[in-house]
Image 1 (cartoon, rainbow, N blue to C red):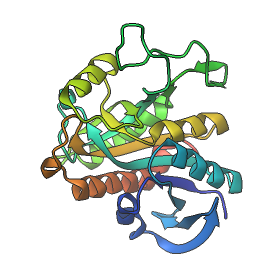
Image 2: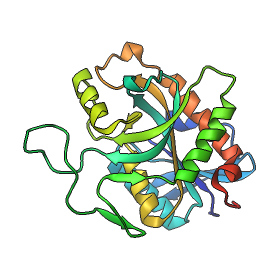
Image 3: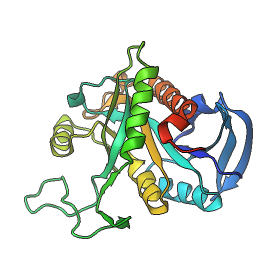
Image 4: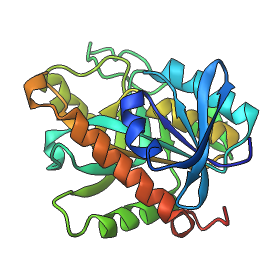
Length: 252
């Protein structure tokens, strides 16, 4: 397998709308998972379905990196969006940072929102990471600009901001409001911090771009729109690949 951009998503449904536009697809196995490789907009790409959650994400991406180091990782899929952001279902956001809100210390006041650990879980280029993974500012800004231009004539809003990673899906409006007031995130998902941890550990550029399938809070699946989120996140990834040299500044 030659070096390429590694595109990761938790489920096949989140990836399908990207792979159908990819040429010369071949299949291989890494870490007992299928890795698809091909060419999209003239760029070598690989697709990896990680499975849901941080543990699956870390295992899958580690296997892919150790097999053949990618030039960049794009983590994508659907997410819950916080109502306070003003974003709607189907809108797209680019992560400026990933926050693992469930690693830390239980507060003495009994709050469910943890306090940061007193020690780092990773040190990257002299920066101690306790649970916040700050993504490359230039990559984020360039991706945000490209997507804003690409969707300018549509009704899709593009945003950038912090994402949170959870192991337990938020299911009440009260909990959602507490999380937003504490972290001010755009979106909630279950894999991003795992991808961000590995990107930092291996010093590989990472972009995380997701589309909202539902609002964070009380679960009402009648209001969800997973197919729209899958379609929009895939469209955003394809646009990032089409303009990857403008986004990254690297000769890929």
